Every structure is written in C-alpha cells, then in structure tokens.
Picture 1: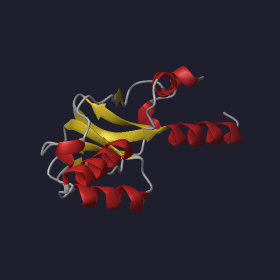
Picture 2: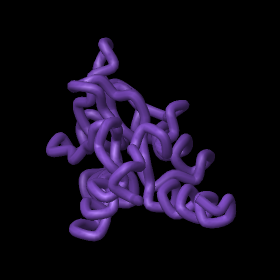
Picture 3: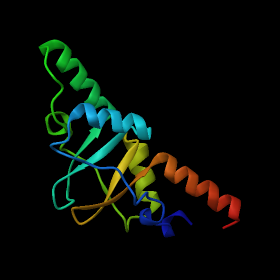
Length: 135
C-alpha cells in the first residue's frame, strides 16, 4: 500500500523558504512564528541551495556570543549539503530517509526546483487519515 503513495500527495506545497540574503534574526523569528524546525533556502530561480535548521540558528547564536557581533545572513549559517526528495518518490522512500537520519522535514524538489516540503508529521497525519477513511 505505501509504495503506491507519493510524496507530492502528502507534502506541503505552500512552503516557507528563505533566500541566502535573508537576515538571520528575521529567519529565526519566522521559524518560531510558524513553529517550524527549519526551512529550505532557494536562489532567485527557486532552486534549492541550502537548508536552515534550528541547529544552524543555535550555532549562529553561539558564534554571535563568542565574537560579539550581529548574527548575519542565512547564507553564513545554512547547511549546503541538503538532503531532498522528489515529489514522485514513494512515501516508503521518505519514511526510510526519516528513519535513517535525523531529518525532521525534507525539501521536495522537481529537478533542482523546490516544490514543497514534507515532514514526519505530514506523513503520520496522512497515514492516520488513510486509516480513518478505510483505504
């Protein structure tokens, strides 16, 4: 059953994304406001170029504390080695990625273009809805 379910059917398409130039403090505020553990970073063509996580933000806070300076931009602290998943991948692929690593959410791409993101919670909600609906 799971192998026939696709990531694009469970992802959030109306996703939050930052640019590399976004002010880090503004990005932290936005993550807190939306209760997200992180968000993708895109270039001017909406291509995925990084990911800013809570952990990256904590590193920025520590860095600012040590060096007594302003936090800076997203680009200075984002991770550029970003795991992503295709919208056409099965939910099994996504679940295996979540189980195999510490990811809380994954950017969903079509080629290199960001089209959404999917979280562990999105998958669990989708599976719960399937069970409830009797499928």
